[in-house]
Image 1 (cartoon, protein in one colour):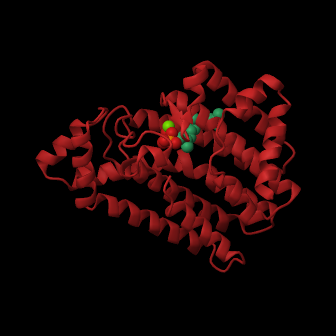
Image 2 (tube, helix red, strand yellow; image 1 turned 180 degrees about the vertical axis):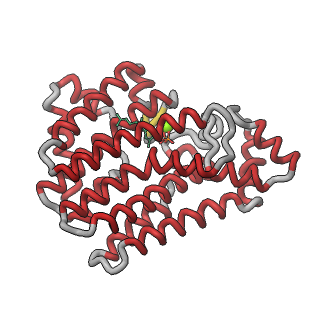
Length: 299
Ligand code: FPP
Ligand code: MG
């Protein structure tokens, strides 16, 4: 199976660094491999597509290792994060190793693909920096939120789709648009799940974003839709650990205010835009399934 080949190639690339790094890498949970699946859906299975998918998943894994340090996250995908188990220094250096090995393998690709991926990583880092900046106080500016999620999440998915199209001699711009809207929808849903999903399913603490200082779209809409007293109450929760009754109250408000529906509707319309970008392309069913899986997911 293609995904297995990708896992094996990733492990093989890491093995070039020696046993110690292999042992550490084994502690990094794999995740859903959505980006790898996207490569396969667009470019099909070939030696090149398996390699591209492995490179992109290694970069994604590196970015999450660094993100968990930045966010002081204790868990990732239901298990203890690398920073929690081995400390920040190890997590940062393992991220650097995965990222550098991915780059080493990227050199063999044509200049469109190598510069597209390299550029995406630079933007990814700028997105993370924006996230850190925006987390210092409550942000009610939607443009800033969208700029940040575009860079932090959508850019790598956009580059994944575009590079896969390049490999398969398909229309790069169409697939770039598809990937961009898919990536935005993915992050909007991620932010919704943080609020409405439980810790067990998420594999990380629930209702964590606002506590971390992240005023995600669902909070922006919630705060903007509430009358003064309720708005003040929500804003007083910023960066705080909530008790059960505060959690229940917040959840009720998210449902009642329409903020939840607004985010879900937006994700659906982004999904629709993604599909419109690739209308007429031969692999419609597969492309639709990717959009559906990204939006109708539980974690
Ligand atoms: C998760 O966000 C973080 C990202 C999607 C990108 C992080 C990017 C970097 C740290 C820079 C890139 C660095 C390298 C080495 C490639 P989140 O905290 O909102 O999501 P979470 O809840 O899953 O942690
Ligand atoms: Mg994080």
